[in-house]
Length: 199
Image (cartoon, rainbow, N blue to C red; front, top):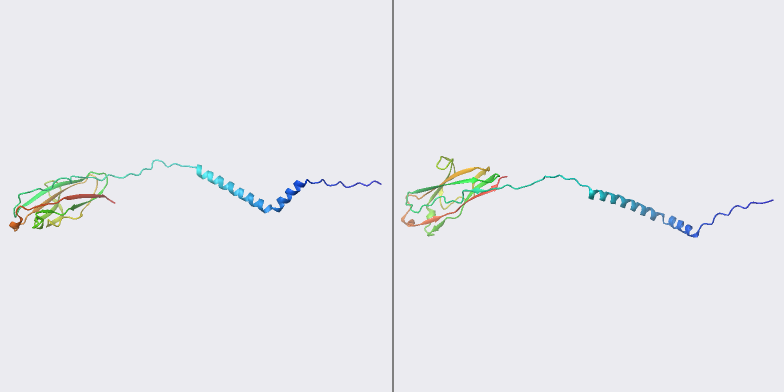
């Protein structure tokens, strides 16, 4: 009677068995590594997309306007022979020659008196009228008659649109009761016309 021996299983290579055992033993580490690789691939893909996409919105411009004053560099009045009771007047034309609205104002420096005492500016009187034209009618009086020594300080002239032109008359008077102590006296003042861009 013949007997059949079961076939012996194929012998695994020692190296393959060792590798399989290592993989099983460190399965968690391999899974974690695969997850990290997957995340890195997603981040790399997303970053690549963000840094290569573009969309242009052309023709965007921001520019400033131009605000200019003309006419304020002229002498308004100049009289050297005043006597008590006299008045002198001078006119000036101021224009917004820029291309934006401006808030206009008038400032005066301190009168410079010669001699310093008695100061001629302490007795002189000043009045500023707005006219509708040179030599025309009065449309307003932004500075009513007051002491010449107390000159306009940041006198508000309102907001002017581009091309606005205004006319101002300055009247200086020496009261009739001014005494002889003011003989040969002199006073001088500088007016500054200012404008700031309107809001």
